[in-house]
Structure formats: C-alpha cells, structure tokens
Image (cartoon, rainbow, N blue to C red):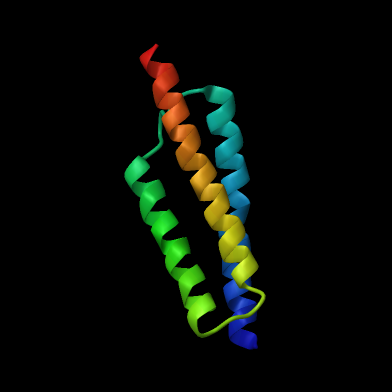
Length: 88
C-alpha cells in the first residue's frame, strides 16, 4: 500500500509536466528543444509500467500510467505535426 502511494506521487509529479509541454508545443508550432528519441523512451517506460500493473500488480496507480502515457503520445503526435509545419 505504501509503495503504491510513493509510486503515485512520482507519477503525479512527472504527469504535471506533460500538459505544459503539450501546451508549449501547440502554441509555438516548432520542435525547438524537443527530442523525439527522449519522448519515445519515456513512452516506452510508461508502456512498461502499464504492462507491469496489468500482468501482476494491478491497483489504481494504473490510471496514472495510462494518463501519462496518453499525454506523452499526444506530445509525440504534436512533434510530427510541428515537423510538418516547419517544413512548409
């Protein structure tokens, strides 16, 4: 129980950064300062955490993994949109 509390705290702290990143990416319409490699590594990490929770340690923290993974995927999609806009 206490482990899930700390895990949830970590995911909440990490998760607070993604809406800001998404907003800045949408507003700036550029990928300056973004690393696709970094975003993909983070996304793989959230997928791994999600699979860990699903396959043997299910609890409510799974929701945070799914939310954070969705936000990172959104940021990745915006990265490709911005790359297309930069090419124009």
